[in-house]
Length: 177
Image (cartoon, rainbow, N blue to C red; front, side):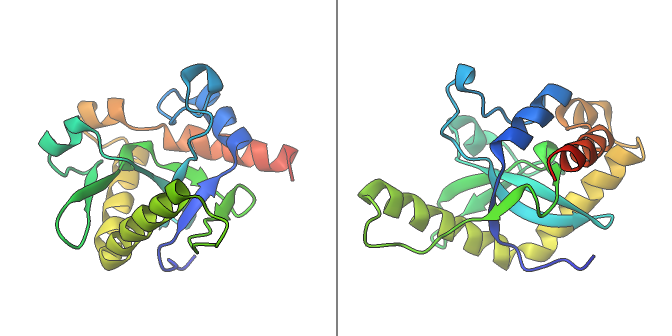
């Protein structure tokens, strides 16, 4: 499978909820946690011929102190402002049935907050596209370390269980095809 140009995708909420029951590291979209309106948004990378979504998150105060690592990268605007983070440790397997390309075009009926959000994610996507090779390499390196059970214990504890989630994707796609 060839690596396409990075783009932003949202992930099917039912699929995310299914995965979160399989692995607690999967970002929650549960209404009980108060995150039911937050989309699971990320870029799709190819790891070992499988599609994975690397989640893109808003920066939190703790992120300014963190350093880029094998499982985490900061996303910067063109003027070097921290505008997001890529959480490689929380990447999840996906297929075309569970992803939807995000509409980044600003429409006349969009609210001011929607326009602001779309402009922000366009800036985040621009960074990701400029750094695509490094992002894809990092995702693949982490994927191989986890799958081959060669990651340091701290990294293993922070990461999703990729093999377990791949099986869950297969079951989900088979039952919801």
